[in-house]
Structures are given as C-alpha cells and as structure tokens.
Amino acid sequence: MPEQSTEYRPLPPDDLSRNLALGRLGEGKLPHIGLVGDTYTITVSEEDTNGRYSVIDMHVPPGGGPGLHRHNYDETFIVLEGEIEVTFRGTKTTARAGDTATIPSNAPHKFHNAASEPGRLICICSPAGIEKFFLEVGVPVASRTTPPPALDKDQMAKFIKKALALAPKYQTEILIES
Image 1 (cartoon, rainbow, N blue to C red):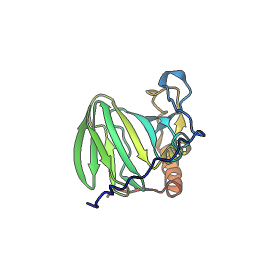
Image 2 (image 1 turned 45 degrees about the vertical axis):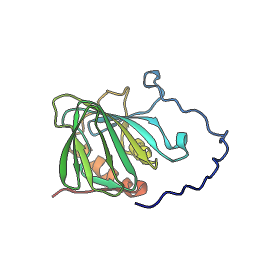
Image 3 (image 1 turned 180 degrees about the vertical axis):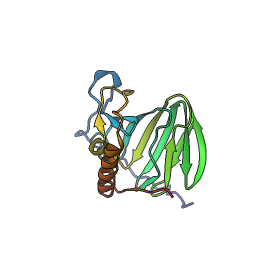
Image 4 (image 1 turned 120 degrees about the vertical axis):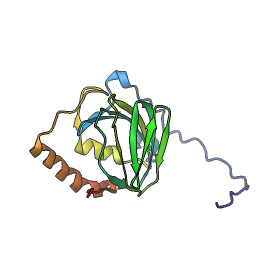
C-alpha cells in the first residue's frame, strides 16, 4: 500500500457555481427507466457531481438483473431490500439487505434477483456516465417500481442490438456467456 503524504495541503475554495442536488422520489421529476424487467431511477447524475459519481435507485424484481458485463467505472451496490446474487469473476455471492458490494472497474460481473421478492439497491458509479447509457437504451416508466413493458423475442433482439452498439460509447462491454 502506498504511503500517504502527511504534507498539509489547503482545501480549494468552495465552488459557488455548484449547487445542492436533491433527488426526491415522490415528486415525479426524477427519470425512471425500464430496462429489460428492472426499473432504475437516477437520483444523482453526472451533472450534479461534475462527473465524479452518479447514484441510481434500482428496483429488481424476482428473476431480474443484467447479464454479464464489465465497464471502466467502480460500482457499489447497497442492498436496501431483499437479496441479490452477485457473480464476480465467476464466483457467486449473495448480498442481503444491509450488505454493500463494490465491483472494481473492468471486472466481469452480473447481478440477479434469485429470490421470490423484489430487491432494492442503491448503486453508486464512479466516475459517472452510465446513467446516460440507461437513458438511451431503456424506456421511461411512471415510477420507481413500475415494470417496463415486456419484450417479445423481436423486441428483445432489437434491445440487445442497440445495447451492444451503444455500450462502447459508455466504456461498457456486454459479455456473452457460454
């Protein structure tokens, strides 16, 4: 572990061009995005943090969760409700309400709700930006728990094609499991 400097460095002045960012779930102003069965609500975007991080409230119904992927940002999940099966570099672990899981950048992973009840996660991504990917590939829905429309086989194929095409723009790689 590198040694930390004990040299005193003064803090920079307050950046008065930045304002308090307050995401309120009940006011209808936050984007709720349906993504292949899950619903993601962006509570803090890159515009709110000068690109440092974003926060996404994730509603993951039974059977939900993205497939195997990796990306160039760190991702931390705080499980608020239910339990989520996290597969990290091929090893499965169950994260339950109260647990926090951090996925380092570029590591292959996925998460899946194998339980019979919905899961709720707070996802913190650093640096920010993936929320724009969600906005481009997902569909707007009414609330934090509104399920997205079910996709038939053709619609799912179109979604996958779009996600695969856009993923490199957001420094994400969708991995095909064998």
